[in-house]
Image (cartoon, rainbow, N blue to C red; front, side):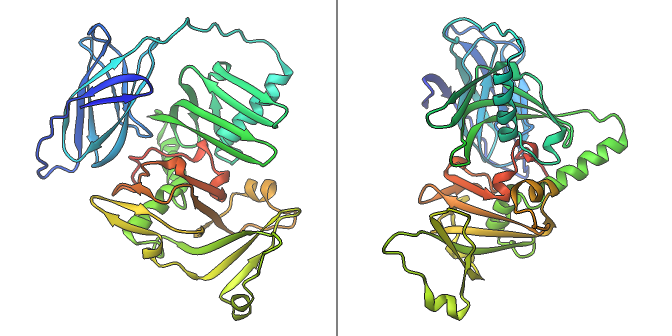
Length: 384
């Protein structure tokens, strides 16, 4: 089977063996250049996991311990364009051959100079990408000099790119994250940011048992109430047990033909949320919890999210970060349950049996989940 991705060719000869009693599987293969020469010490990993391997001198790799599901295989090598290819793991996958193409042009030379303007945009980039939470304050971007920042004054938009992996040490969760940034945009006029890429997680070595326990506690705290847990709870139909309440939120623009749902408001079925100052939109929250069938349905080995309007998600087992309250909410606000809003950009979004989204960029997170960033991100293979 021949797959073209980002202008790079990759051949996947998947040797699938029947699944027996095992619950985890292996992906193995080789990495070579266009002439067929093996590339030793190349990185092969599954996107947003701790699962990966380095190629041997013969260019071979074997990624072990993979739970069933759909993943993205990322292969990178210094001086070559990275390859990203989908791979579905329901059994051992062998015979994968990845062909890497040299990067066009020459390697950039990074010169570090004191530039107040760049420092300003870099601070905004880090706050938007890594976050502003308590965990974010314990993160460090180790190679910020490779980030190419551009600010468009006409649109008040900041964009960022990088030719290599960004390396982030997360001292709160105990991971070194290598992130291949594919896109970053921050529209400061609308207060809207979007970024995506391919992270690889490398567990850090704790200094002692106390630090190991702290990392375990923080990882658990990051998982509980996260989108990762929510999607799994949605697929497993355990929302209420896991602490979630999901309601329908309807957002309307106040135009000339705008009509309020007066009857539903009077009956108490709907509550109008106080609009933000100068906002042209008004939101109506339906008080009844949404049934599962109006949010997700089963499809083959996985699931499909397909809801209209917005989902208003309340997590009632943990309150908001103090920094969220002090920086994002009105001055008189007090800590409350974590509330987030989900919106689909596509009619449907598929996810596997582990709750991993096939197209995560088709889902927009607002409020608390929108505030949490890279600092709270966990690998997909994280287990409580």
